[in-house]
Length: 343
Image 1: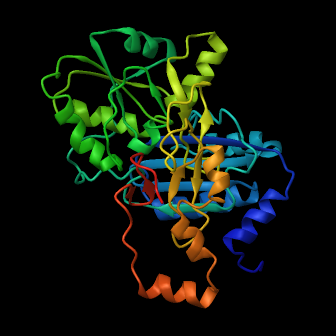
Image 2: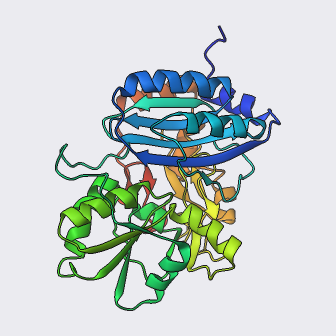
């Protein structure tokens, strides 16, 4: 049996492997009778094919973000289609691969939900969403002054990229967004509403939720921002998305348009939309840094983290274990808010 590798060792091993890989995502809301048994068989086959990624399985369906050795892609597609629950599920192929591999290991977990929503079981039917919109149809909503376009992602995602004129709820989790969106749209129950998200999974569930809450004309972008970009390029459509699409893998983003709409969190002055994790592993907060600030700070979010990370390992271990450092106001959870510059 191969010895357990550290995260650093796994990254080095995959990074040194020149095998071409195709990054993709897919999901399906479908009833899975025995999620644990499904998971075990699924893991075994994907491991045989050399797949890497992060996949959630629940009784309500599957949510997969992963990469596949390109030479095994056809075999992977055949395997997925052979599963009754997943036959013909659409894949969203990554817009760009990036310099680093998107994933470094294969993780498949059984969850209560494939997208945590904070709503009790049985309250609404996730398999009864609103209708899909193609990229062309979605553009019509963007340009329609009577329509409402809502971003069903978190604030740190919409900060670096979003559709023109979209409602951007300032939330940190999807469960917060499901709670706040009906309130933001109160009085608009008869309006034309279009939802969007990264790959379609959140806006599909949200469309079912809004229908349950009494909104009559709710649709959502099929395949999310990822497939929107594909359709725009293939059909020569207008690109109404501004900036970058945040993705939940090692790449942290895909360029959808050339426009940079966010600002560096460190200096609060320069335009930037590249996310970094603080090099201090005890912090590891996610922040946006411009080239100058990232170089100046040597990959740290603050001088405090740079100082702490330079301490001897026993001292760092003691501090991390015994002394709680209160983060400044511009920090929230595992990400930095775009407010004022740090020390």
